[in-house]
Amino acid sequence: MVKRTRYLKFFIFLFVSIVCTRRAADIDPTTLSYHLPSDPIVLNPVISEDAYSSAIQSRIFESLVERDPKTLNFRGLIAEKWTISADKLVYTFQLRKNVFFHDNTPVLAEDVLYSFNMLMDDKIPNAHKKVYYKDVSSLTSTDTHTVIFRMKKPYAFALEHLGGFEIIPKHIYSVGNFMTDERNFRAPVGSGPYRFVEWKSGMRVVLDRFEKYWGKKPDIRRIEYQIIKNDAVALQALKKGDIDSYNLKPLQWTRQTNSEKFKRQFYKIKYLSPSYRYIGYNMRMPPFNDRRVRVAMAHLMDLEKIRKTILEGLAEITTGPFLPQSLQYNKALKPLEYNPQKALSLLKEAGYTPNERGILSKNGKPLEIELMVPAVGGFYDQFISIIKEDFYKAGIQIQIRKLEFQTLVEKVNQRDFQAVMLGWSSGIESDPYQLWHTSQKATGHNFTGFGNSESDALIEKARLTFNADERNKLYHRFHKIVYHEQPYTFLYTGYALIALNKRFTNVNVYPAGLDMLEWKITLK
Image (cartoon, rainbow, N blue to C red):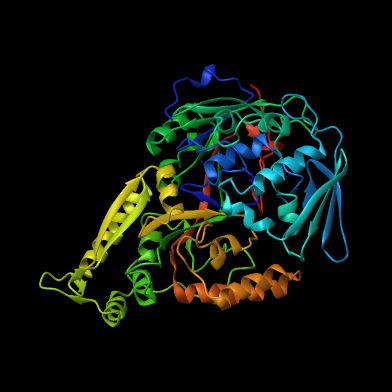
């Protein structure tokens, strides 16, 4: 599934799958049934920040432009063409005249202005999105189908973001209170190729093809996101035909889906996913306000063992804040080795020594770490079982706190955590401002509290650097600073391991992943 969103997203599992209550024979053959392991949090693109919501919204809403999944070049969606001034300060978009919202009203310039104004409204809690537009001085329209952005200063990713936010209909979302009316969060209306039908919490979200869509209508008439929390149940639902697509877990990929029957019925599609996992530390308070402790954490995690066992070798250990398949990533940096002795030496330097029970302590206080994780089991439980034992051997006690995903994200956003295990998904190229600039410590996604004048300067200079090679040199230096400071223990980027029913054809893997809008259906 190709994500059109331009923002980094929290995720548990990137490709997202409830117990199916209907048999395959009862499902329309023109329906594509996806698996989601959890409900989306909110179906409102102005506010949402999780990958589950984004996966669904990417079908309902459209932006002015998007990146072509095959070439990664920009192509028009709601905007049929655009111009950029020579000084990179003025961006003019011409809207198509045949684009309609799902209630059959036309998409006009006033909807673009309204969407942007809501995105930037101080009362809307979405600091993680506002950062990309901080240098916009104005957005105006000269007629019903022309919008003009003016910038205070050039921004290397301006087209990506000015053209990348989702357009919502003013005549619907401006009625009532935007932040309190439930329909604004559970009954989305957009202009994309699919329109919202229903959301039954804990069961499914259903979309139907929008017959008045301006572009080429996809073969798939209905999309159902079936919510199945248990991995084994989800795999069985796939094999029975109750769902069509499921992101396999590594063990399922290597050992449970190799039969000839499975291979006849399903594609097995593998590519490095645009995401990475990490454990993030709250650097505002002990013990993680000490760099030596953060580095010690990395040396206590046997990531190669985890990669080979739990992940069946289907992952790449990462070292920093960019995707390893991107040119932004500094490939000269190697993962910190698993070395408990080095970790203990660093902790000793930081003032921690074993007490009479062998527990590391400082000033009489044991080194105890509360690690928050999503309450979904699976990989998290397996990972915890390995690191908890290794940390215990080193004299460190880890307390695991399992929380529902929405609650966990709320606590992170409130800075109410000590350590948290999560992941980020993004585009192949990203602007680290949102996650790492010091201006984002209070309310943005820089929840660890990382940053200094040098890292800020590199982020800011890169935003002004339009030459990709020069910009990536800045990012390599920034990557090195993050690597040295270890605000996260960077874990790995996994492979997307997708099983898809072979009744769908014209399935291609592109640099940006899969594009289901081009899939064809074989009807028997």
